[in-house]
Length: 252
Ligand code: CIR
Image (cartoon, rainbow, N blue to C red; front, side, top):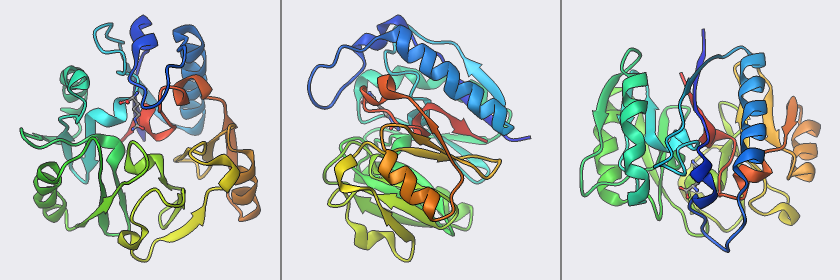
């Protein structure tokens, strides 16, 4: 059975990292939205493993950043944000029964939000959070799983998956002028509606449906018209902390 690893939201979420501005982050609203997210994943057919929140880790709900799954390997990351590095030990313990674990070592940095695998390639964002040394450490892992690795320069956002969102096994939704699109090779590209810049996020689920943010109705409509089975969900409080739909789970 497909499994989703998620993590609770601490009261310290109000101090989560935010790239621009100083939004008031409300942990109670974030928890309600996160409960709905977890329920949608369960409804789609995932067995849910929920790790407890850690008050010392305001951003721990964004569990995707703590580990990257590449085939049979679980890569425990070393975040480019030092305050996020203590998030990894419980994630490593939870992954141990499922994957062979390795860790990114200093001076390498990798955030899971910078990595996705599509077709036979692991795409990795070179970003504020993931550096060349981190990418160099991922390269042999990809090769060991028979996969190529392609780095993608991220220029105008936090992570690769803030601007390049897989919607199925061969297509991504891209925010224009945010990444070096030439590095995306032959992936199918659908552009996010310009009026919704960086508001769209999505998660393709095991039941063939696409969980997508209510903050991006035009992009969602475009995807529905293209035949995607779109299930909208409101995660506005988590988006206010620069999160999206991929970043709140690790799917096994
Ligand atoms: C951070 O800045 O690290 C968090 N506030 C947001 C992380 C979002 N992670 C993701 O999209 N993979």
